[in-house]
Image (cartoon, rainbow, N blue to C red; front, side, top):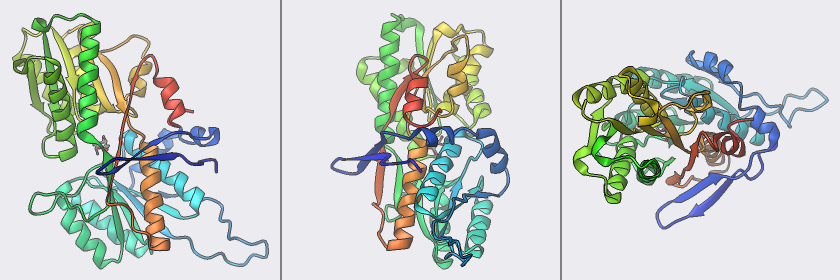
Length: 368
Ligand code: GLA
């Protein structure tokens, strides 16, 4: 498979950063079958990668069993997680292991999934947990089943409210990515010469998830540092991290502030911004009076493709396939060779808009 050297590591003082630099053409095109992935995702046990086994012989001798690894995600319907699975599949095809992909929207499903993995003879799993506070229970269960664990995206939190830093984690540099959203919102506001007195910031928050809080706090800090008045920055909490959740959150805020004529919008991810943009449309605010900037870059492709621009201006793209590839590959090396993964790996983002998204998403292997 042509997934040669997809990850370039950039070390800084605290953690290692990486970004995808190149995908081969054959890999790009195989990332595209999302409807099929979505259908599969709805079941608990949604599929295994089955690359040809190089160990199979012409004589018909049975090849040694492949190492099996799980990849558990909290929201299998979200394109972000489908692209992570695609990256995991690439790693499996390249290194010759098997990935068992499971949707785990709640704690019960996580525990059932770990039981399933153990019964299937898996040796470990990568997880984006539906609730970071399940961390201790997940680790107890994994230990008793003899499974190794790497967390992706949402870091486990222990009973002392601190991150469980002994469990390997790979995820966004959340504050930095949030800050870059704030800077991009400010830059676009200035480019459009919006009067500040008519403008407000709608920050859709999900405070119970640390990476989400760090992202929106980062955006607020950058806007404030640029000179946007703090008393025109409004937080509104979403109860659920889907479009209806952020739509409701934004709608409440818009109702409270009819005097605001122009809105900057940020949230934990693309989905959060999409719901808020839909809320502005519902209240008759023209698209030219809205600048929404998301995070992920995977969940706004249809939006950016719309013939008529909406208030969704752009997104900080982080490589979901890269995160899926890297975490499963690290887990495989850990299981196979005993090489422990780094405890903390962070990823950075690239700004995409209607102008450049097709080109950047192609470069990053997300679009064919
Ligand atoms: C969280 C969000 C996802 C995505 C990941 C990226 O899990 O819910 O949409 O942003 O973080 O790390």
